[in-house]
Image (cartoon, rainbow, N blue to C red):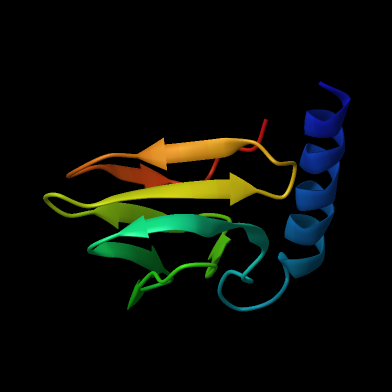
Length: 94
């Protein structure tokens, strides 16, 4: 629980510092530890295909296609696994 509180504080500082800049700043929140077939990331209108060990960012939308999957490991070592045909926005940090 303490790690989660620290994580929220760190992300909050980045958000506050970047609030006066045009567009959202890419704040790395983790990386892709598993990528099976086609997994994409959408951040500020830029679409990319995720590869193994790619960083993922706060407010990035991660999406898996049919027969695809991914596992994201966040900086606090928590994990998010997305199965086939899934979509999630990395916007909540607990």
